[in-house]
Length: 296
Length: 189
Image (cartoon, rainbow over all chains, first blue to last red; front, side, top):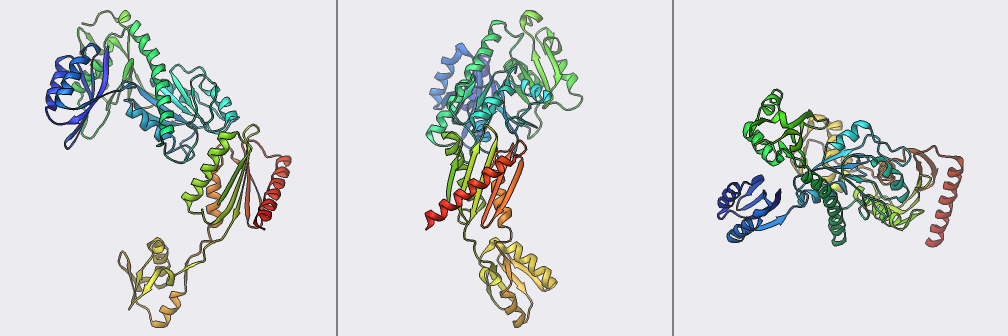
C-alpha cells in the first residue's frame, strides 16, 4: 500500500531525497522546481514513512499529508454559466487540488432549475469514469431536495454541496451560490468539511480495493507508461492515476504500444481493461489479482 | 443602494442580498440604483425582482475627457478613448491620428475644434436599461427562464420562473411592486 505526501522545501540535498524514494521503491508523481523552491508529490510504501520523514527533517523541508491524492475528481455544476463559475466552482476545485486530487469541471447540459433539471445518460457515464464527484446545487432548500434525485444510483462516491444546512446523505451545507471568493476562516472550514467527507467516501473505495487487491499498483503502471511514451514537451498530466486504474492521453497509434508494455511476466493488455474515455484519452481499469493471477 | 430579499429561508435571503450587492457593484451600477427588491418563492419556483433606478450621471463630452492642445487632444480619462476614436474617425477620417496612448492628433480649424469639444462621447442613459437587465439576469436563478416584465416609471420589474407565469402571479407581482413603491416613498418622505 502506497502513501502519497507532498514535500516542499529548498533545493539543498534535494536529489538525495529523490534517490532515496527510488531506492525504497517509491515514485515521484509530480515535480515542480521554482528557482530555489521545490515541490514534490511522493508515493512510497506506507511502512517507509519514518525513513522519508527522517530524510526530510535532515534536509529541512516540510512534508504534508495529501488525503485525496491518487484520485481524479469531477466537479459538476448545473451549467458552466457565470451563475456558478468562478465561485464557488473554482474555489472547490482549487481546494481539492491542494488536498492532492486531480480535478476536472463539468456543466450539465440541462442541469438548471428545479422541475426541469435533468442529467443525461452520457453525462452520468462521464461522471462514473472518475473516482469521485462533487455536485454544486445552489442556495434553495426546495431545489436541493429535488435535485438530489439526479445523483441517485451513481456508481462512484459523491458529495453534494449547497447553501442551507440540511439532513441529507452525502451533503455538506454552507457552500451555496456566491459571487465572492471563499477565503474567510469559516468558509475554509466548510471546504475542509467537504474534503473530509470526500476522504471518507474514497477511503471506503480504497478499503474495497485492499480487500481484493489489484494485479499491480496504478503508480507502477504509470511509471512504465511514462517510460515507454515520454510526456511531450509542455504537456502536463499525460497519465493520471485513479484509485483502480489510470487515464492515459495518447496520440493515434500509441494505443498498441501501451497494450504491449511488459509488466513482470504479463502484458498490460492481459491485466487491464482498456477503453476509450467519453471525456479524454483512454481509461485503463486494472483487474484484481484474483482474476489475473500473479504478475511477477 | 438598499437591497431587500424576502420569501426564501434565512440562508437564501442573506446570500441573495449579498449576491445582489456584489453584482450591481461589479457592473458599476451601485450608485445608479436606489433600491432592489427580490422576492423568492423556490417552492413554486417564482422570482420577482424590482429595481428602482436612481440618479444617472450626465453625458460625457469630449471636453470632459480631454485637454485641448495645438492640433491635438490630450486624454485625461482613458476609459472612453475607444468610443472617442471611433467617433473621430467616423467624423473626420484621415485627419485624425492616434499619436500615442494618451495623445490624439487632429487637423481641425479653431471653429471645428470648438464644436468638437461639445460633442457627447458617451451617455450613460443610453445603455442603462441594458445594463440593469444584465444585472437582473445574473441575479435570478439560471433555471428561471420564462420572464414577464411590467413597466412602471423609474422602475424595472421582472417576474421569472421555470413554469408558465400565471395571471395570479402577475397580479401578485404588481401588488408587491405597488406596496414597495409606496413604502419607499413614505420612507423617503
